[in-house]
Length: 111
Length: 114
Image (cartoon, rainbow over all chains, first blue to last red):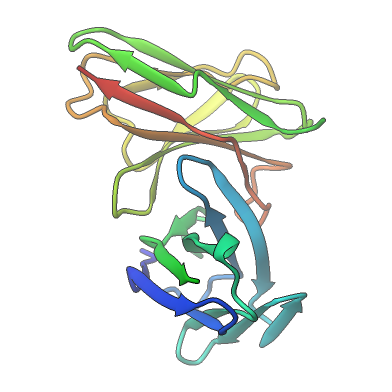
């Protein structure tokens, strides 16, 4: 079945760009998502990308998709302390049609 | 305001007791989901419902039960059969039950078994 992997931790300085990476295994995944979770809260949908796209930009967020390598990344420009959170990558499992989540990447923004 | 509400935010339970977590949505979504989150892990699907009066087991359904008597509500019961129930529970909904329908999440309930 689908497996989604992320690195556990990323630390950046305020004002720098952050890049959070994700890999997935199911090449038939059609939609890929990025969610943000602040401490003690639910998941907030940040953005998503269709598998027929290479890139999607939404204000400070840029999503890049490399289908050949099954690699997804989320770039946050001008990272702020309010961006400190856990970021989850999720992919639709092609066989199960269910949303499969990565373990989440904790982004720590240093002032 | 449209959205998904979960109550309570924090819940404490003694071992051997059943407890029910509430999830309500006013988004007119057909599908609803329950996930469990443990530290350092991704979300794992417990149960989901694509339509009223119908639901399916997810990947970790053992020790849990659900009902879907109303479109707006999808309560989750954590039974005494669940061996390790302490976790953060998240409810979600989507407009339809297709995997490609975007899921929106509630604020979560943190359950602690004493």
